[in-house]
Image 1 (cartoon, helix red, strand yellow):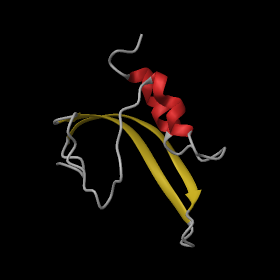
Image 2 (image 1 turned 90 degrees about the vertical axis):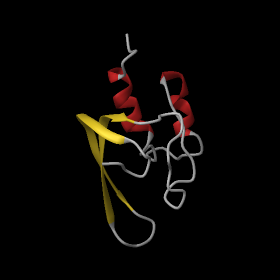
Image 3 (image 1 turned 60 degrees about the vertical axis):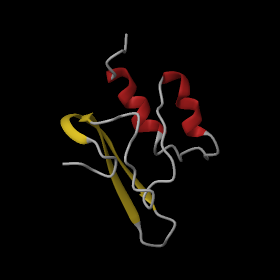
Length: 93
C-alpha cells in the first residue's frame, strides 16, 4: 500500500509516541500517533501530494535544531518523534 509519499510500508518497527494537542480551528483535541517504519521506494524523490504537504526534508542528529526554529516552547510536535527515532537509524553508533 502506498501512502501520500509513493513509498510502500515494509515494516512497522515501533511506536514513538502519541501526542495530543488542541487545534487552532476550534474543533477540539487532536491525537497523533507517530511510528518508526521501514519503507520501500525512491527515498530521494517522494511523490508528495502537494495539497497535503508544503515541504519535506531529511533530518539527522546535526539537523534537529532546525525542527525547533520559529516554534514556541511546547510546539515541538515534529522534533520530539524524530529525536526518539534517530537512535534506531541503521548508521547509529
